[in-house]
Image (cartoon, rainbow, N blue to C red; front, side, top):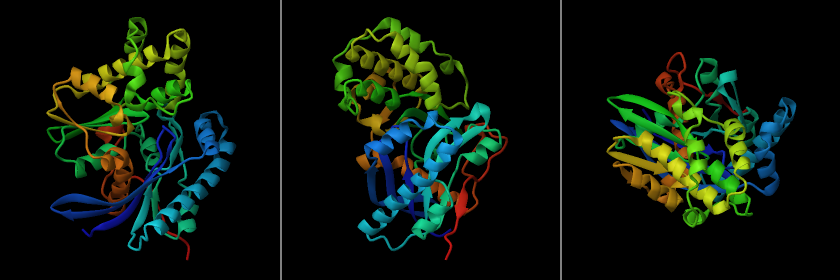
Length: 353
């Protein structure tokens, strides 16, 4: 197997921007990687509002937004290539941005995965990794675990604290993964009530008190009783979490953040169980209050890596999923998504000359 030079892209549910990472993947008995360059391109307020309200748009509107978003991604990619003088590039591997994710209705739609992206940037593109899994009866998520299995073999559990907390559990050569609970999508919503982007290091939550009634209400949500494979989306938060926040609107913001922090920590810790080593990445890894609550509730050794891995692991992984697709190696496992079979997912687009 040859080594690959890839740009991986990820835009998550926190809607702060697009993460780009330029990586060298190489194989010598096992897969390794070296992050060469990285950058986050922040969305302006107009794009933040557009992406935040995608769920309320009809299909025709989403298709138009998709075209414009594909152009936006091409602008970011070309700027990235130019800024870092990238010459050696096999392909771009992109997740896109999730507009709709409703696996129970067999629907998932990620914008920014149009074939035009390849033409705009003049580079081969591998993208749209979720659709095939949905067609095969899967959840279309999570996708990251297969990549984690290959390039982070030393950890028993891997947790990403992004808009949602998702976990990968490796046990006896078996791979299980699912979404645990929402995290930053709720924290940021609450912080926005005070015109803040986020609760820096969980300082506001730290200053609050636990509301037992709210905590018990959250702990009793039906999703936590379901077995994997299972996944969460913005739709679930809008239906299940936002009404609870509204019904507890008289509680001070500090107490809301404190209670949600302890609720999320409880759910995350209960899913870590007896793992020896757990790697935690994603923006939530910077939330000191949340992390300390998790540590207090588990015996697993919690590892917080360097900032490159914390912030760019998802983009890194989607770059690697493209490598597996290019090699026609399975990058979606039925044990993870619930699909009828393991498969190699994603579309490959070659630019028109």
